[in-house]
Image (cartoon, rainbow over all chains, first blue to last red; front, top):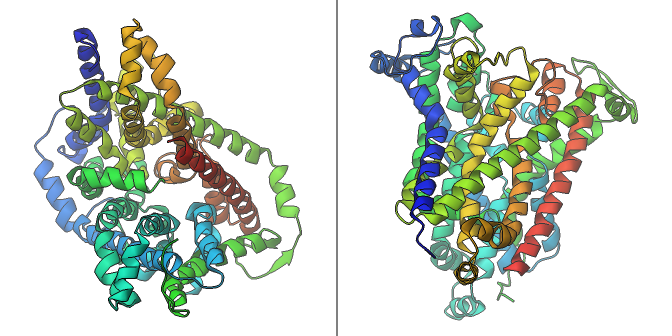
Length: 282
Length: 292
C-alpha cells in the first residue's frame, strides 16, 4: 500500500463484509426456509432461524419426488442436467477445437467465409429466434431427447475464437519441426496441439459447464416428458402450481440443489474460472 | 504466418461438424424467421398468406411495442448502472485490502454460477408481500410492497435479481482493471498530497474507462438477452406489461399468443439489434488491444 490510513482499511473491510452479507442474503434465507415444514409459510412470514424439518425435506426432494406437481426426484433431474451440461461442454470444445485447427493450420478456399459463418452464431442467440428454432427441432423429431437438449447448443463462436487465438500463438518452427520429423496433421493435433491447449481447454470447460447447467429456456421449450426434465427449468414448472398450494420448503431445497453444482465448480476451480471468463471475452 | 499442412480435403472434414450445427440450428431458423416475418399464419399452422411488410407495420404502429422498448431500456440501463456501481465500490475496496483478498473474491464471485431463473426465485420470495422478510420490513417502514399488483415494484424486483447475479462478473473485471493501474502514478499523486478520494477520481477512474465501457456493453447485452429466466420464473412480464422486455415479448407473442408472423417480425428486429451490439463490442475490443 502507498500510505497507511488505518480508518480507510477498516472502512474497506467493513464495506466488503456488508457486500458479502447482502450477496449471501437470499441464499441464507432459502437455506433457512428449507428447514421448516410447508405449513410454516402460510402463517404470515418466513421463519428467520433454522427449523428442524430440514433433513426430511431435503431427503424427500432429493430421492423421492421434488413436489409441487413434479413426481421426479431432484437426484434424477440432476442427472439430466449433468448429461446436458457435459454434452454441451464437450460438444462445444470438440467441434471448436477442430474448426480452429482447420482455420489456423490449413489453407483452403472460402476459409474466411467459414470463419464468418461461425462468427454469425454470436448474433443469433436462441432467445431472439425462439419460434423458428422450435419448429426446426420439432421437424427433426428431436423434442424430448438428449440430442435435442444438447446438439442445437454446441455451435460456439466464442470457443472457436479462443482456440484460434491460442493456436496462432504457437510458433511456426514448432509445426515445421513436427513436419520434418514426419508428423502428419493427426499426430500433430493429438501429440502437440492438445497438450499445449490443456489450460485453455480446462478454463473453457468451467465456463461452458456453468453455461450448460444453467440452460433454462431451451429445455423448457423442448421437454414435456418428465424423464427429460432438467433441474433448473423444473423450478418454473414447480412454481406454476396454484399459489396457495406451493410447498415453499421444497422449492427452496430444489433451488439450492440446482445451484450447488455450478457454484461448487466456480469456488473449487476459481483460478480456471477467472481465466476462462477473461479469455472468452477477448 | 503459421506453417500449414498441405491437405485440401481434411480441413473441410474438420469444419464439417461446426458448420452443420450452425447451418441447421442457427442459419435455418434465422432464415425461417425472416421468411415468416412476411407471412400471416393461422394459429394451427394450416395455411398462411404473404402479407409483405404488414407484420412490421403492425409492430411499429403498436404502442405496446414501444412500451416494451422503453421497458427494455429502463431495465437494461438500471441493471448495468447499479451492477457496475456496486461492483466498482467492492472492487476498489478489495484492491485496497492486503489481508483476505482472495477470501473476499471467493465470497463475491459465486453468484455468477447461479442460473438467472433461480436468482429470480430467490429474490421473489424475499419480497413476497405476504411472507417475505424484506417486504414485511418495508411494510413496517411504511412502504406498501406488492409486486403482484404494482408494476414499478415488479420492475425493481427483476432489476435487483438480475443485478445481483451480474455483480460478480463486473467485480472481477474491475478488480483486474484496478490492478493494472501503475502503482507509480498513484504513488506520485500521493506524494503531491492528493487524498485517496481525489486520486480515485482523477487518476484511477479515468484509467478504468476502457474496462467501464467494455462492461457497459457486456451488461447491456446480458440484460437484453440473458435475463429471460429471471422474468419468466417471476413476473412473467407482468403485472400488465410492466416487465415485458423485447425478448420476453417475442416468446410471449409467439408461444403464448401464437402470433407467429408478429413474433417473427420481432425476431428480425432483435437480430438487427444483436448484430449492432456485437459489432460495437468487437470494434471496441480492437481498440482495447491497441490500448494496452
